[in-house]
Image (cartoon, one colour):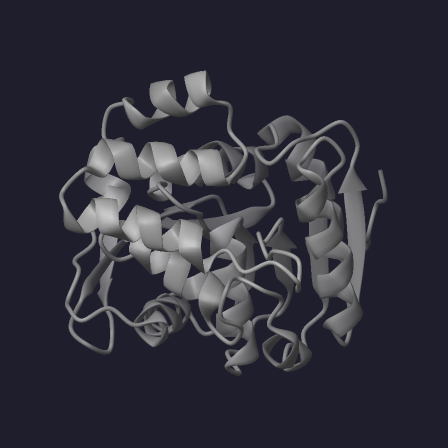
Length: 261
């Protein structure tokens, strides 16, 4: 493990695996750097994979008050530490954060947005989010996680089981950060049209055909706003895709081509 100091003094922990073009991997809600390590291992033969703990998670610090811009500064610090050139992949709300970072002008070579969970333009999810935030304020972390997972369409029995998993309660407060990321530029978790229009890099958008319909719809709506983008539907895959299926798709894009499946 290594660490880099972000602009506000927060220590950001990261690991590197493999050799080749650097690729920063950005995890989604309730995940630390270990969540994307299997994907990193699957790609380490061709790339230099950087997995990191977003602020408030794992071995990273967490200065207050929180702002989405601070997380962009964290990525900028990583980007500088690894030499100022890298592609970037984000999953779920991590894809929302990658979209913000790419739109800010950070010169990533390529961008991958894997199921950013933007909701329909005619639906405001802020009320559900407010319920989760209230539970967090009351210190009811397990219930907050359960409520969040139910919002995401996870069945009740599975949500209860996941909320009780080791380490999840400790990560629960960072759900507030993910809500802020997804509201950035478009309150209510709607599609941030102007933000996406500022992403100039070649961009791959991924959506699993077994994911909730709003995820697939979001992928198509995201692609329409980007300057240079392609969308790949991952056949029979849901929100979390096994590395052995996902790695070949990413490899093809990062090495210069797009393999549709």
